[in-house]
Image (spheres, rainbow, N blue to C red):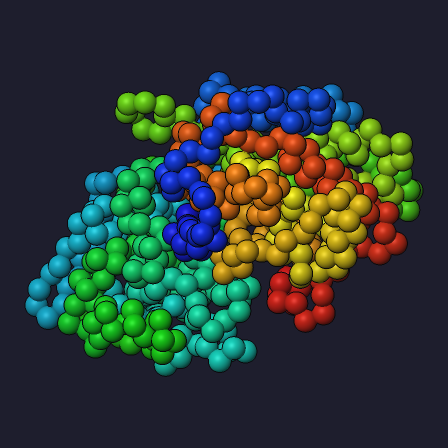
Length: 559
């Protein structure tokens, strides 16, 4: 899952939630059970555990997109789909859908960010103070031009915000902050905070380069040291039929990010200091202005075409009239691979993120396939690639589906259910946007599980996993996350404390391992039953799900 940018805020909230409890120290691992697992006689839970252990095995090498390990993992899922009795629904009668990609790996040589102003030049230090974004349009690129500060690069006139008003970006470099005005609701703030939307806005106005300047709030969620340590990890974009990257904005010759500590250098001798601009962003009074002098940017990247694949299977519906419509289940299969050479365990196994989500989807498929009567609508199961690279596999499927695009009636996504302490609930993120809410409430009541509201709506997780690719295609979606209400009434194991531990210590690290994490496979089996019941209800309903009247995402994307 991609959630690093605001983890610190989440941790702070989780710490508050755990106050006044006899909780383990923040950095103490949850204790492993010494008694036999309560799900030891539950075949559903044991099947899920077996799939998690297979997908998170060291042999899969962390399942990074485009690697041998990912291919092995996709083979495992394809074989499981076949064993369950599902039909291949990929390309050419197979379980696999080809996903064409460009991979870009940044190089240190050629990286440059220099501010020339009032007769002096200020060269920022690579990695310590700035990092170019990996390039996808040219292996080596340079640009020098006047610069314009464009605030948060938000164009939302209906909300009274136009950060570009009165500014000329033609042939200039856009300097901008991330995020969106705090007064926006969570959905609109999430949409306008997207890097892709910001780059699109500045490119459409003629900018030839872009510099994102981090604020202290940005780095509270994603410390610069963490970002800088991973600068050599490859980035990816989808690749079109012409061999070029999709949504790579070639007119923006170079884009870069500067650290919050280097912000004063970017704004040196300008109309306002970095501190004043940070305060204005917090207060909602940020305004753009032309910067004196020029900024020079340079980058060098190794760009290569690669391929990966989604794994797609279909359970045909039982009604001739509705079998052509599909309820789409998704879970990302990829993870982040192997750490650079060093001591200790280097394999990021990704047991919770997201071998567990894929395993729950497989068990959901098995239950639906084994049911006495199939739902009237068909059920489609998609294990996606390149979620960790920007939801790319899901976006490719949503825009190039192997079934008719208009046949996808709903998406049920599963990503990183952190089931490390037993719970009585599930959190259906984004359910309030569509008529799926009534379906979830009915299914949960029948299964005997509580539904809890998203405890951290400001995290905007609804746009940070694969369901967002389907949302952008106009498909109503819900993202099922692990619960927050402890099943242990004596307070012995608190799921919020367990989540805090995982995010602080094991998220995107080698210790996300099936052999060390106390995964609650009984809860996972319950989620699979809930998933299956949701699919049955949507599959049997006389009408397909629809966006609620006036919903932001429905209004933005509904076809």
